[in-house]
Length: 361
Image (cartoon, rainbow, N blue to C red; front, side, top):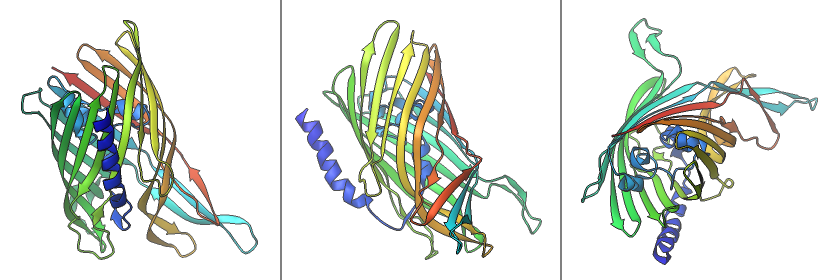
């Protein structure tokens, strides 16, 4: 026990200072490439993700897979209108600006191979897009694409070190289309995740992962940040009941450093007769996003970076039939954090829906 905990502390000391970097390019969609299973439990992924689900989360979980596993997932974010209000000269609150967050869709597929003496390998593909599909642009030229999209190709490797210890790494190639100087430009980057897991017993597991360690994005605009957001997570899971009729698991992650507030994910799942699954969790996350604010008085858009909060209950359900499993989850949408002299009003608020399907063979 002493060695794993020592490793976690060393990782924490080394990684946390590098996370407090300013002027980073937000690619938060990389953190959404997880299963509805995890999202229904609050989004905890550090010690709960194994097999194909470990890709993009904690690749050390690849080493815990015993056979072929194929994973499909989707993550649908609805449109969000957030109105920023400020006091006028009469000390009345009036609308100052509006964030119009376009709906996004993420589709992803992972595959993990059977365990071997030299370790486990997994491969993955993900596509993220936002806005409405455009067939023809303003000049009348055929476009047939989304305003913004990202394509990710990844490969992961997990190694069982024995005595319940495993290490893993996955490497991703990121191709992004982003607006620069009024035109859509293609940029590229590479990121990787480094993970660690310790299977303490049949009922308990610890994990740690450093996510999105990456090369700078190939963007030439001085107005666009080049460095990619990193994150470091510590977590664990525990099976508090395991009988023939039911099983209950709990999991929790923390996401230091806590410069802007404590970030954590907690959740539980009930598995009944090894077929029906119910999940409940809570998420408390705060991150910087760069979005366009429409200034009502000036009638112009300005790209601004500010803190957004994702906070609230998560729910999920699943059903197992043979070696396959279908899961669905609902999680809260992000909201801008108000600053001094501001109030925030959310219009047409809806939850985020995620689906996942796992087949083992």
